[in-house]
Image (cartoon, rainbow, N blue to C red; front, side):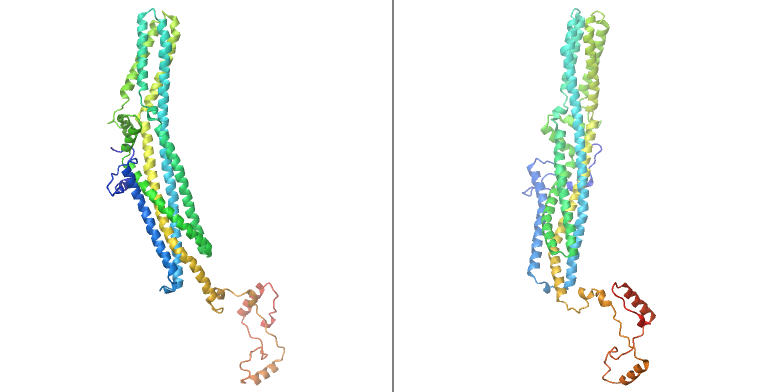
Amino acid sequence: MGAPQGYQASWWVYLLHQVPRTNFQFEVVESSFAPQDREYQQALLLLASVAGLCLAISLVLICVYLIRFCCCDPEDEDEPKPRRVCCVTWSCVAAIVVCCAGIGVGFYGNSETNDGVGQATAALLDANLTLQGADVLVRQTLGLLSGAVGGDLTRLEEALGPRTEFVAVVRNTRRQAEAVARILAGLPVGGALGGSPSQLAQVLAFLEDYRWLAYILLLLLDLVICLFTLLGLAKQIKWLVVIMTVMSFFVLILSWGSLGLETAAVVGLSDFCSDPDGFVLNLTQAKTEVSPEILQYYLACSQDVPNPFQQRLTMSQRALSSIHSQLHGLEREAIPQFPAAERNLVSVQGTLNTTESNFHQLVALLNCRGLHKDYVDALKGLCYDGMEGLLFLLLFSLLSAFAFTTAVCSLPRAWESFHIRDAVYEDAEDDDPFTPQARSPPPRSSLRLSAPPISNAPVSQYMNQSGLFSGSPRYDNVPLLDRHSPPPSYSPSMQASYVGASQEEPGPRYRMDFLT
């Protein structure tokens, strides 16, 4: 069957529709959408199990890596320890960044899927309102016709009993009204469908609410784990990193599981979107008593498909016109002779006018344009926005699975590096200038300069002492202060910097007279 007007399957649908499908016995299964078929269910489960296989492979790789990490001596590795620690830390950060990007993709995909399912649900509810409106009009018209046939026309026939020609006209009017009632009663409107659109909309809305909530919780859990992992790495909080490692392992399993569900859902949805008319036609015929001609009329809504109601609606329209002309003839000829019959005749004419108004509304509701538009809107919601959202969710699960696999492998080495760094700092010598303790600035109190004692001895005495001590090996290594040397000379720039440093100290200030 061809695609309905206004809808064309996307290239994603065609691409995914070509994915091979096999059952548990590895026999090829047709790609037509048949969720009730056991072999088709096995094919989707086999596609979903690919994610389970990837989960098993990732768990094996994690176990091998952790066994090597626990059993092997890190000193045996050729790579230097600082470089190895740096690589481990940056691999953790890169994995978290990739996971954050995947979380953004997941939020977008979750919103798109919700919008698509919401559009499909709204379209189904609109179609249900159309069918219910047609059903109400049919029941209301049948009630009016039955009341007119059993009440007013019977009393009108009794009032015109003396004239047989008038009685024959009334009886003919009754037969035509009964024929219109039978035609309307045979129309397959909302009652024949059994409320299928509304029930399907309720099921979709129920499933979508829980799906949306589950993905929101999963995305928030991934985001919290990423943020706290970054916090633990930045602050080197070992217990926090250990907890986030365990949580990452748990979310890793959830990511692969969601990837399997999304794979099966995307492939199944592509099968439905590639030929939606065939599935809807088969399902409606199996669940309802609607004829294939009526379904094809609403699904295609083209000039090539005839209106299955056209003949019955034309017959009803002609019968109502004939009843209307016969009542006008009775009003013109019988009422002057039988004034008592005027009341019943006016009542029958009012019923006829209401019936004609309801009939025109029913013809408009039974037209294929309204229901076909709702059908196309539902397809666009599922196959455009819904398909796009599921693909983005699949990408999110794939990115988060790889990111958390890397994180689970890297985080144990990261928290081990915390202990290594502390041990290196403790074993380093105190006078090592490359340790963080040595690189830390000294306290301000140690920066205070002590003014040397000022000697009041005359210059001549100083010169004598200098002459006596010069060349003496006993005083070559004696500090200048012990030799009663004069204060050193300072350049103007050194004096200015020293004065500025002394003014910043809140403690007592030393006199700087000796600098001048």
